[in-house]
Length: 243
Image (cartoon, rainbow, N blue to C red; front, side):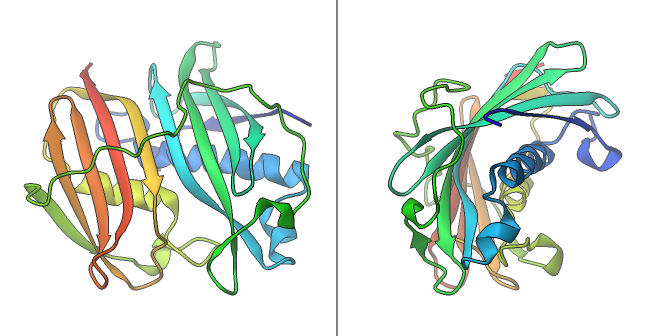
């Protein structure tokens, strides 16, 4: 099956104080759709684990027309598109229950070796059903998100708790997004229009991180650093607009 369709309800825990779907929950929704399709394609977690391999989200770009609210249903279509030596790409389109467009996303996924925790070549698994060249939006992943300056005025520290860890034994991608937004200053009446994230290094259980944020016009720039090594673990930009 080259395309997978799924439907999800925006739960109470998925909605923010304004009633709209939170960005970390949006990423979880996309990951769930991708996971379901991977199982159909035979490249799911259980299958890859027998090869000591796993999927890691490397980059994602989301373009938002409208966010759904608590209690509403979201229909998602997803498909694998292109593939190269080290990465495969997955596309998403989301719609309201009435068929109105909500958001689109492009994502880049890498294979990693469970034992070495290093990246693995895509040829360690066979090819699977894809729709080459069919993209959900115009993102080409040629540039990383803009970084905040070393003197970024907004910062928080967090520890990677047990509930932040996923099946791969590291912090889930949606948690990075939550950490990034936790450093955001109050931005009343602002609505996310575009989200771009690069995941640069995994965060393991009990590690301490520092999340920093700087505002450039209508864009918030975020970086997450390991407190232990000082290395950058993720970088994100959110473009905001008035509701």
